[in-house]
Amino acid sequence: MQLLHLDSTGSTTWFLDSCGQTTNRDHRLLLSNYNLGVPIPSNELQLGLNFADKTPELFGGQEMGEDGLRVLNLYIKSYSAIRCEIQAELPRLKKTATSATRI
Image (cartoon, rainbow, N blue to C red; front, side, top):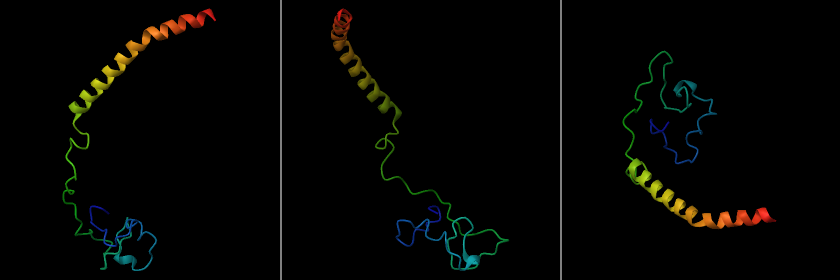
């Protein structure tokens, strides 16, 4: 439905609006039941379908998180920070574990 650019109603459910319609069945597309307004012979190919390239994205790949190296570098920084925090807490955890065995 999006490839055909059929959002002409402005409805938030535009892709479902035609599904339940039963009038003018010979004017409707097979899968979506969208009314083209002209007869569509069932023994012919449905011409005029818009399969052009999709519209470009609003943001580039890097802004949308597609830059794998950038994501990996962020992960390494976060991982290193977590390891430093664990190393700093390890002596306290060992002392607490030792004290717990006495109780």
